Image 1 (tube, rainbow over the protein chains, first blue to last red):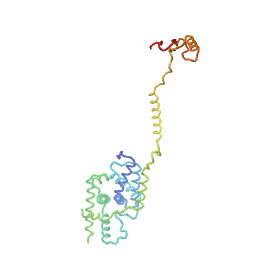
Image 2: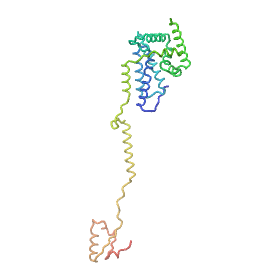
Image 3: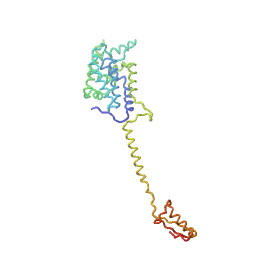
Image 4: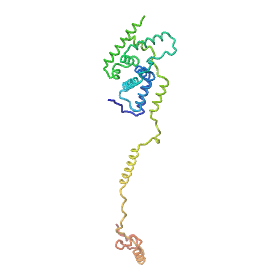
Length: 169
Length: 124
């Protein structure tokens, strides 16, 4: 059951949602890209989630897990619709004209490492490493136990470590 | 594992486009309620009805607080003092009793005391 905070005016609720969005803007976007593999779809997903939330004019009791869950659900729906998308977007910033070979190598390595993960592991690692969420928070978003979230994370990290060792010359 | 986490974090994450930021700005701006001046704010119909009912009740309460106006005074008896010479007294008395416009014209309700000065008037 969804619970909402009933204290405060509509204006206060909107201000709280705005502050949350501004503090988590990039993390939410990267999370949405990691689920949809498309920056355009991810943008649409975030816009629709916040549009619906603002129209309600109330702050959910637990705003962070609520927003992440809403993004996840919307992203899964959108991904189903855009399954034929050929070009997959990465959660990493593109190398726009970078000539630094070290930066390029690091980017490509991380990109390759993320490819070895399955969806649960990838999502869990994005939420923990890039978005700074705890296992308990991830568990709340995914509606699983904290142990399950921790095991996705551990398995994913082990996979990436193995892949990193194998890629060494 | 910490080392791998650091390596993952060392690469910048993707940024949303300027178009997306603009669209989000509009979504928030449209959702923010506009604060109208006090006299221009819309008033709900039920609030108008409630205000009218409250005003009516207030008027009724004030009127009942004031009470009914006092009844007009009923003259039961009057005393007319006449002093002067006996002839003048008699004329004045006749004039008074015969003048229907005066309130004490009714002889059954008027007591006439005739004398020469205030010392003869009875002490009440």
